[in-house]
Length: 210
Image (cartoon, rainbow, N blue to C red; front, side):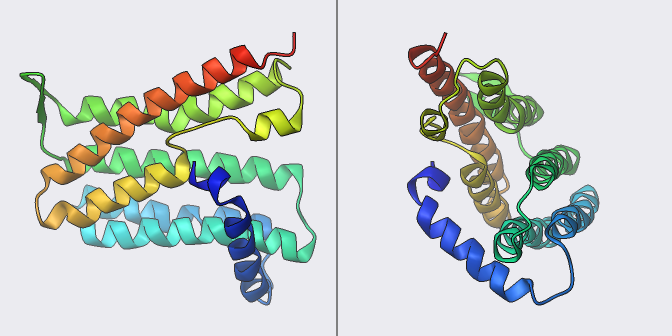
């Protein structure tokens, strides 16, 4: 949603970052791969119960993820391989974040009178947020149900990757105030991810090019 609503702003921001970091002799694809390093350290921080360090490290990983696209545009090295690596790193980094939170341990929540384990919501967010949201778009394109780039670019999503990360980072930030706030953030993100998948399926059905 943020990406589609503020596409011009995010593009300009990416180019500015690219202009700064393209001066460093590192290729765009190398920047993409480098985003994995702070994510791995963030995962270890979560395992060792250091939520504050983990938040900083995963935020650095997200910043590097923004840098690679900008460097590719500024240096004229945009490629299909770069897009593939970027998508793969996004999924791996998000998986490390959510699995790290699961291993760190967060409070369970009571929903509808039933106590639901936090790990179930993390698993739901992994499935629907990190996997199904992107898969619902990619599979529609792969099966050529949608072929017009303009239609594909309009595919809705109330909670895409940027919003998921912002929501989870906010929960991590509030963890020191009250640990259950992080659980609430994950529950909200999981539910909104399910809605996003439904949005994309309905959009594909309505705009199908048979």
